[in-house]
Amino acid sequence: MRKAIKRGLPENIALMKLTSTPAEFLQISDKVGSLHAGKLANFIICSKALFEEKNVIHQNWIKGNRYIISPYSEKPINASYNLELATGEKYEVKVNTKDDALTLSFKVDTNEIKVKVARNRNLVNFTFNPTKNKLNNVYRLSGSIAEPNWTGTAELPQGKMTTWKMTFIKLIEDSASIAKDSAKLAKADTMEFIGKLIYPFTSFGNENIPVAKQVLIKNATVWTNESNGIMKNADVLINQGKIAQVGNNLSVAGAEIVDGTGKHLTNGIVDEHSHIAISRGVNEGAQASSSEVRIGDVVTSDDVNIYRQLAGGVIASQLLHGSANPIGGQSALIKLRWGFAPEQMKIAGADEFIKFALGENVKQSNWGDRATVRFPQTRMGVEQVYYNYFTKAKEYEQNLKIKPIETRRDIELDALLEIINKKRFITCHSYVQSEINMLMHVADSFGFRVNTFTHILEGYKVADKMKAHGVNASTFSDWWAYKYEVIDAIPYNAAILTKAGVNTSINSDDAEMGRRLNQEAAKTIKYGGMTEEDAWKMVTLNPCKMLHLDQKMGSIKAGKDADLVLWNEHPLSIYAKPIQTYVDGIRFFDVEEHKLIRARQDADRARIIQKMMKEKEGGASTQKVVPKAEELWNCGHEED
Image 1 (spheres, rainbow, N blue to C red):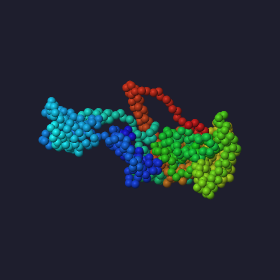
Image 2: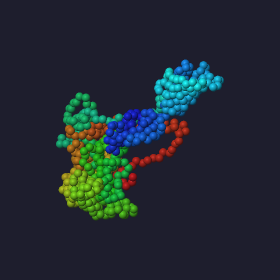
Image 3: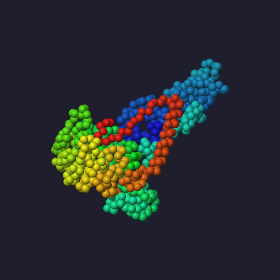
Image 4: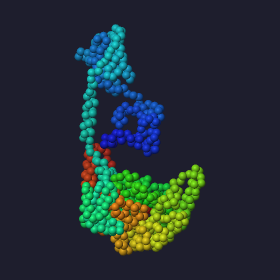
């Protein structure tokens, strides 16, 4: 904590991080964490301010019981005094403290006499002989220290008793301590620069957390995804994180002006199926159902793929559990708010979703000889898993109603009940038409609807049944034959599903492809003859609809979130690059700012290398560089 304070953390905040903040985390701040009447008598007594280097904890009080950690040290005294006996004798005395021991120096004529003092808290005893060569002339003094003066009684050499007092003159500056403090300050003044704090603390972090501004983008080609279609030479005003106005020849005093001449302004891309920003692996594959697992618990905000995808025009993603189980884990819906904390990335008020899976992954047909034990091992077994678990969930719900006290809470079944009661929605990994039909039939049997089939590469075969069920389709543009159940995939799938009336989107399932979803959407024009506007909706408005976010996202309309991308040219072109990306009106990516960030990082890297070389020359120990490969997850990853 001292290091953090030295680098700018206020001491009161540092204290909170050790006391009141953890008490709040543990939900016991009504009892502990601060000194308030009525709270538990838990406190410590220190020799100095808590974070000072030579501070000593003397006592730790817990529930009013005192535990002595280190007995009090005597207060150091370094001062000069006048010692006067009642008989009239006077001496000049200096008092010094070293290693908790007091020493008195008497000045008699030109001689200096040093005397050790026996001290017990504020009580003192000492003897001295003012005449160096005269025997039987010892004075014995005892008394007390009552700052700033000392008083007591003295036994004279002849045995007579009298009184004495020492009157404070001034403090004595310890030259050694002064030199030490000066050296410490000099070292602090010359301390090497350690680099600025950036948000997040990784590559491409910002020196300041960006904030929303009032911005007017003028004269752009605006893809609205609304009834007014693509507007030429149009203006869009961003204010307080929302789209405030859309029109022509807008003028607002005080707004930052961005020239959109010759450029295209669109909604930000939304990736319905992503695995970026997840710490460690994406699968909990030990059992057939892991509905209690929550991706929201492992969102990581410093994944560089967040920034990379902002640079590709992506503004939001559904972070999905993998496809190791028929019933997977709960997903997390995030906006790519680069530099914000994980909880701040989550979309407030969004509906809850969960990952299901069908096919080769869940029956473990490609897992090798080690995967021959866990049920299910067949596609028929996968169907049975669903019936078993939803039946169990219904029984659990009944028990909660009939005997709530005796029924133990089961968070796995809670999630399945939310599905049945239409409070949680399924995104299902799927390929083969027979299984697609099967899960829709299971849903009909229990009175709910499958929300989305993702991958859905044989969706074109059952588009009519999907339309009747009311399910969405989130698919790939032209992936094919990467395993046997994908053998019948065709690049016309998205267009056929759309023309059958199924709300369809293009997703990535891949950190790299997530950076160029605009190009994946463009493929639906080549394969299926989609219009440019409908192709663009495949990665903007349509995924917002399937994630139940279209009321506030997915189109450029006054009142909706200002999630916008300014492109250098037509967004469906392979040459298109985002110039600026806004999330909630905050500019999280700017191509010109990116150049400055790269230059700053190059300079910082050079500074660190120079520092390492200097340390090595000074004899510091070294170690070999151990490269660590970047982990990019997708549905099928089993590794940690």
